[in-house]
Image (cartoon, rainbow, N blue to C red):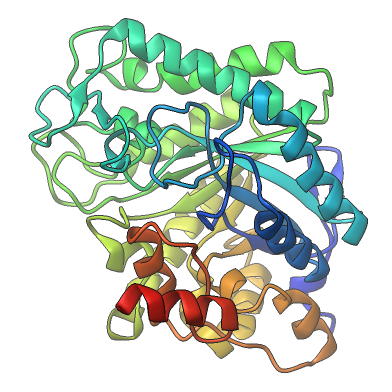
Length: 388
C-alpha cells in the first residue's frame, strides 16, 4: 500500500513532494545584526538534503528592537542579500521542497537584552506597554518583512500568531485594549487582516504562499482558546473564527499549535512524562480540518508536535492523513535530532528519533547556539560549556 506520508500535496499552485513539514526551530546562530551565518546556512542545507515537503525558516524577526534570541535572524533590507544566500544554498541541495519563512515580533517573549513590550493593558510583567501608533508601525514592519521574504526568494511566509509572541497576544480575549486593536474579536483580528491585505496587494508573485501559525489553546487565563479575559477553561470556538478569517483573507495554510513554551511548555512540546498531551494537538487539527470540510473552505491544515511520538510517528501520521484529520504533519525538535528524517523514512534507514530530553530548549533559553545535544557533536560540546 502506498504511504500517505509520501503523497504529493498542492498548496496554492505549488506541489510539495510529501506531507512532512519542518517547523520553525530557532538556532540562535546568526551574526552581524541578524544575518544568517555559515552555521545557519549549513543547517538549512542539511534540511534540504532531508527532502522535507516544506522547510520553515525560524521565527525571523521583523524588527531589530524586540528579539527573543540574541543571535536570532532578522529580516530587513540590510540582511536581504545574506538571506538570499541561504535560500540559494537550500535550493542547490533541493529544488522540489518549498522554503517558507516564519515572520514574527517577539513582544513580551523578548529577551532581557531587548525591548520587552506588551499590548495587553492588564499585563503585570515588566514589559513596556505599546501605544496604538506603535502597533501600526509593527504591522507595517510585518508587511515589509513579508515582501522582503518574497524578494529573498522564499516560496511564502508563515505569520507567527502563536506561543505567546506579539501576534498571539493580539488575538487573546485578555487583549482588552480600548482602541481599535483590542476588545472585540473584530479589533483583535484587525492586525492580521490589515497585514495580510497589504502584503497580498503588493506581492509580485501571485503564487506566493501565505499562512499563519496559532496556538489553539494556550492554557492561561484569558489566553487563546478561552471564551473571555477571565476564563481559564478551554473554548476553541473563537480560534475556529480565526481559521475562518484566514480563509476569508485568501490565505493558503493554517499551522495549528498549542501552548506557550515559556509558560505552558508541556502543552506545546510534550515530554516523556507528559506525552499524552500530544493528543490535544491531534484533536485540534481534526477540529480545524472538520470545519474546513464542513464549510467548504480551502486552507491546508498543518499539524504539530509529531516529534512526541518518536519511532511511532510514521504510524500516527499514516492514520491522521488516511482519516483526513490533517493535510501535513509538522516536526520541531525532530529536525534538530535528525534533519534527514523524511529521506530516511522513505529509504527504510534508521532515524535518530528525538528523545524528548528538552536539551535543545535549555540551550535556547540560555541564549546558546541551539541544536540536538544527543546526536550532534557540536551541540554536545555547547551543552558541556553551558553546564559549566
